[in-house]
Length: 611
Image (tube, rainbow, N blue to C red; front, side, top):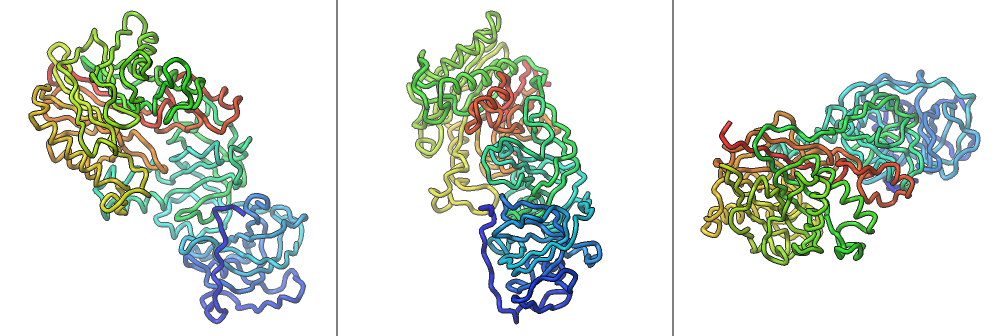
């Protein structure tokens, strides 16, 4: 039995089970089963609500075996025959039957009679109606032709799925792929019936509208499963093409013809697939970086814990990055491929190892590798030096590199070495730049993440408003940042200023709203008409990597885009691929920009004169 379905039997007195429809048939547990005798209909067991009206009642049902998962789920699914269907769209005609032993002679589509007790499996109210304590199973004939019910709608609420719990369905699609992280590790994909899911607080302020958006995301979403608990299965039976460079199963791919049985899965629903998916339209990989019109190009890029060990080929595994020298070579190859393709004049890099700026440092190794890959004519990147051995106290830092033939630093870097950045986040770094007639200041940031909620206290605990834990801390960081940029400490920096990096906050969350209230303009939102996102978590897309410029900087912006090379990719294509065998890693790995990180890079083009 799957761990996802820990049994929680709710034993009720039979006198309390009066809400069922259909006959109230008394079952004698001492008699032998007999096919064709009056039986309790499946729709009566299911009822028309979230839980069965017959919990605890001993029943006999007859149905057709629509799916068998004896080894994985510990049971099978029964479907009502056509003559038993009550025609009520609010009651399901399918049911899970839990078995301690799998009958040897019980093929799919065979008619059977089963005696067992009605129960709800899981934690109420998100439970799966099932038949348990099965004491007898009898085959009632040869397999019959039985097809799934075709479904092509878009559910408005979770109750729409509940009405089909336990049934075998064929979803025509297209269903949009919204999550692929567990494809190769657990044999799962997540799809949405109404297109890409966006993070609620990317679109709405925290509160009722964001909660409504979250409920709509959940209602239209399905987890597709191979019904196995095995990790890293050798074969994915429901895919006609194995994941590969040609078939990467990127998010936004369209799935047609999904055949399986539907059941409760935590708050939502999932399908245990019976047949291979008919057709999948692979979402294309954007091979070229966005072509932006401008005189100078800036990019902010999270480089996914770029740690180079001891800088001499040893020192692995590292604290947060590559586990082996081979992994680090693959990581470096992908990061460099992305940087070369973007060919930005300045890079603001987050999650770089905080080990100084010397010849053995991670930022030095990355800069040398980039120059080598760019060639003699364009390979003249240098570190925008901070002049300190450690930037703050965290193991990672914000760093900047730039092409010295295209742009020069103006004045020394400034750092906000104060709480709460010390200890709980990365220290913001501000650096002035000048290129021809353009002068501006870049402020690289990496705010506290939404993780570590078990350690959060007081207002930093998750307030259940969509912003996650530590929102109060991130809001304080935003306030400290704008106060610093308005203070005498930064008066020598050029007045046109851009806040970039990983703020771990979506577009309508408190930290971003605070920055906008102080006059900072979201230059990506102003520059693109598509739904903007740079990160995907739990199947929802949003921006953790904003670009916010003051009014002086906004006048310089010619265009801004996000290059979707990472957020839509499965982590099976990343450099490490932990858990995969060496042959699989070799087949999927390419020294290309895709899955080089888990964040998409932001690219901004500046013009010497206002557009």
